[in-house]
Image 1: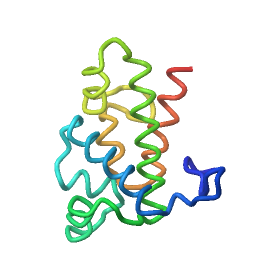
Image 2 (image 1 turned 45 degrees about the horizontal axis):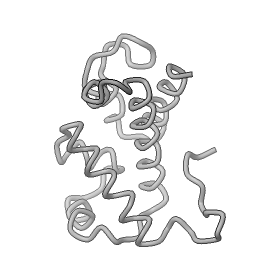
Image 3 (image 1 turned 180 degrees about the vertical axis):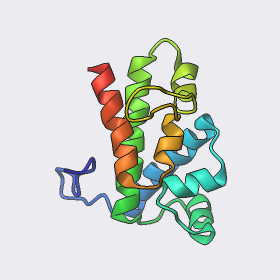
Amino acid sequence: MTALAITRNDGVGVDTPEAGRVALTFFFNLMAHWQCSVEEQRTLLGAVSNTTFYKYKRTPDIRLPRDTLERISYLMGIHKALSIIFSNQLERAYEWVSKPNTAAPFNGQSALQYMLAGRVVDIADVRRYLDGVRG
């Protein structure tokens, strides 16, 4: 099961330029809080090319591939879970992804390092881990 429904209840698909704008606005704002480099951002988006990356930054009203939407959807879930876990300390929520973590599946890596392996499942693993932590 993916983290992203393909259509909304009103029958409007999420593969619209408006959905792309919302997803990319969220993504770039989160990346600023996480202090991710351009290369890290490109990896989290699915190893997109420099041309595609800068097109996303320049023209956010764009239909995104399902894989990209799925990745951003998992990142939204990670952000939500961290916001709940660290509800009184939002800065800690943003810092958590970069701190080394001894819990499985991280084994001493930060969650960001783990996600930078580049696969959707790596991002999904972090989301599932946080969902388990928050209960």
